[in-house]
Length: 393
Ligand SMILES: Cc1ncc(COP(=O)(O)O)c(C=O)c1O
Image (tube, rainbow, N blue to C red):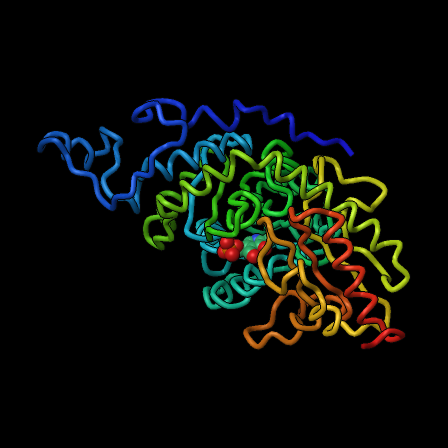
């Protein structure tokens, strides 16, 4: 596999924060303030008139948040980026900036469950319709696009990890003049840079790999000045899902180790996935790295994938016997995590995309973290053995 992590030499990750730091500190300061005062009337007036750009109030502009946005824009190859208080805030603000009542958007199946619910609740109430398409079927995508206002992608998709030819799908939208947006949380800009493949906007749950330490909930949208500017003009200030300075600071810290963490998740994830693929009690692995080849533009794989047990494995017993792998949602941090599909299929809140598009009830999602591959494998192997019907304890 072509590991392009080295492409992002330190230049992409420094730059934004090595200028003007107080005391030449190697780590940037956190500008933890809600407001910024003006030196005099004229400066205030010039700022209100838009003749001078400077921070006024942190919901609009904050230097620490801006530093993160500039770093992320560089990493994704975009002109601009805008930070949010969560991935969902980024997704909802971006989508709402491009639709109005009566519009239709096209989305790929198996999008992140709360994006699916956003489309099925708030957008539906706004009379915005959603057509779901199989992102692997380019003809179906081409048929669905005409007349749509936005094309929403995620690749690889949540849970079933279907990896799409993102560049080809983006070209179909471009041919119709439809802006496209992709959730790139899984691959991170280390392994997929959708803007360079022709997608118009990239969204992240920065709570995942960008932060990388399970200590921040945040989101970001990157793209051209024009499209990010559209989000910045209305949805950003008025919905107000602002990324906080402290969380931006944690993200800046996270970005500095993103390439090395992604390589480590890739290596550990592939090793575990390949061993599971050979396990007699495993029926199927959903991991793009185990296919013959990755789609164009996806240059590596992360630590998140799912697999399907053969009949006869007690999945509750498997989950409860794990030690290193913890039962937990989210992913992208140091920890290894497991989510059984049969639990997700019983979620009480609004229907989720797993129910709508069908995930296998014997499937299990794994996030392979950084605790050490051999120890993680031993944990999985022992839990599977203990939970198999021949060896129930
Ligand atoms: C693929 C994907 N996109 C978006 C989100 C939403 O991000 P957040 O939880 O930061 O709002 C998640 C969160 O789990 C996710 O897995």
